[in-house]
Image (tube, rainbow, N blue to C red; front, side):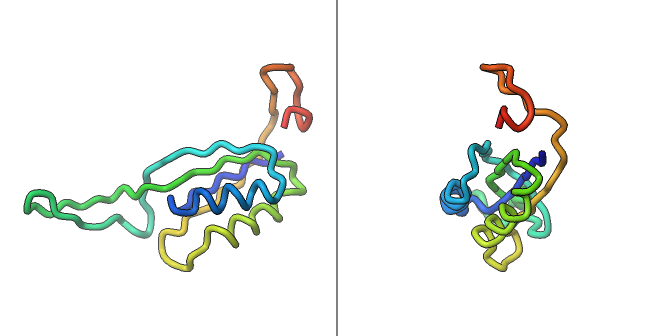
Length: 112
């Protein structure tokens, strides 16, 4: 099993959620997050004073899937979230050792 974490633009929340459900993802965790990367934020003015805002709002998707599903879901995320501009986000893929469903005690792929 693998964990796919995708950090994407906030405006991609609904389109990506719909695309993942269309790709038959059984569940996901979505979080509103702030971060910075290549964008390094932007400058705004507050009461006449220049303020550097270097934390950019993003949306983070966490999805646990079978190893075989990783490549196809990465393609779905890329196709949906990519705008071609700086700040499109990142995808991280990490191994998952165990999954346990709290309600039933099921383990492994049955718990997904």
